[in-house]
Image (cartoon, rainbow, N blue to C red; front, side, top):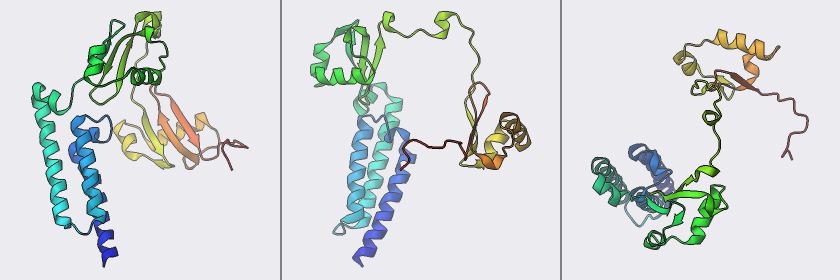
Length: 236
C-alpha cells in the first residue's frame, strides 16, 4: 500500500507544481525576483515531502502548498499596487558601474565581488571593463550593461539604410501538421500555402514539410523531412 500511496502522492505533487506557475505567472519559472525565488524553493520542498514523506499527512502538505501559493500571489498583487512595497517584496536594481566608474560601496552593500562582476561582463561578451558606461544588477540577479557610445554596434538607422516594416513570425506547419488556427487568424488558406510551396520547391507537397513559417519580412521558409544531407553531423 505504501507504493500505491507514494505513486498517488507523487502524481498529485507534480500536478500541483504544474498548476501553480499558471496561477503565479511565468516569472516563477525564469527571471525570478526575491519573492519568486523564496516561493519556488518552498514549493519544491513541500512537493518533495508530499511525494515521498508518508509520515506527514498529504492533506497538511496540500494545505501548505495552497497557503504558500496564495501568499505569493497576494504579495505579487501588493508589489503591483505599491512601488514602496515592491522594492521590499521583489528587490530593487543596484547600480554597479556609473559613468565608467565602479561603485565599490554598492558592491559591498549587496556582497557582490569583482570576480562576479568580471564573470557577468564576460557573459555579455565584454572582456574590457573600459567599454562599460553603466552596469546594473537587476532584482532577478541578471546584469544589464550599457556600453560607452564608442563601443556600441552600428545600426541600420545609424547608417541611414532603408528600414522595412517587420511582422511577427507565423508558424504554419509544426511537426508535419498544418496549424489551422494560425492560417485562419491571418487570413491564409491551405490552397494558398500549397501554391506557395510549388513555387518554392517543385515536386513537394504539404506532407513532405516538417516545419513552415512566414518570417518577419513575410517570406516563407520550409523545412522538409528529407533534407538531402548524405552524412549528417553528430550521427552515430
